Image (tube, rainbow, N blue to C red; front, side, top):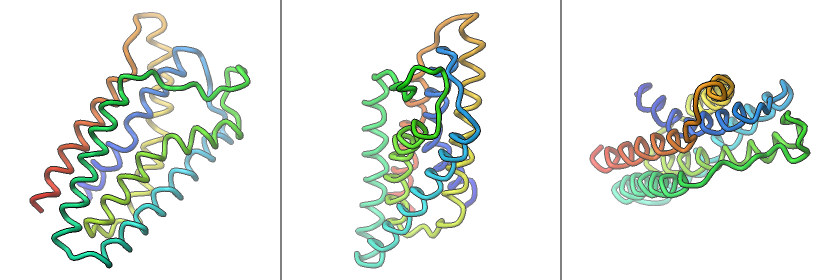
Length: 184
């Protein structure tokens, strides 16, 4: 089960690599305070989403929630796949080459939208992961942002890789997990 939760958290957070690469290519840094804010937002949003999904699971019959949750994950995967054609927005509004606390709030909300949707979908299926999923999402998100930033810095010297590749991988993983949920 931990592998399944890790894969869900990974698919939720992997697009952070693309954003990190985009920032690294533009030499934009994320301050320590902004990193803490991003972590907290990911944790709070994921926890809230699972709680909402669990409430829905209590209201609807089990077979309907399994199909609804799986369908929701597949739909999120398809939406993420379609969105992968877009270039990530820069949340460095003041062009300071650093994401500050205020900019981190809008970036954190944007990054957590996937985890909110996926959290509701998993909660609806009846997965009681309220304690592990949010922690994994927050950790993966920060690690992937930092890793993406390092990769982006290195790529400026080598070549320009489209950051949307990570969104595509996350979308495919979500679709697979959603389809598997139909049969579990």
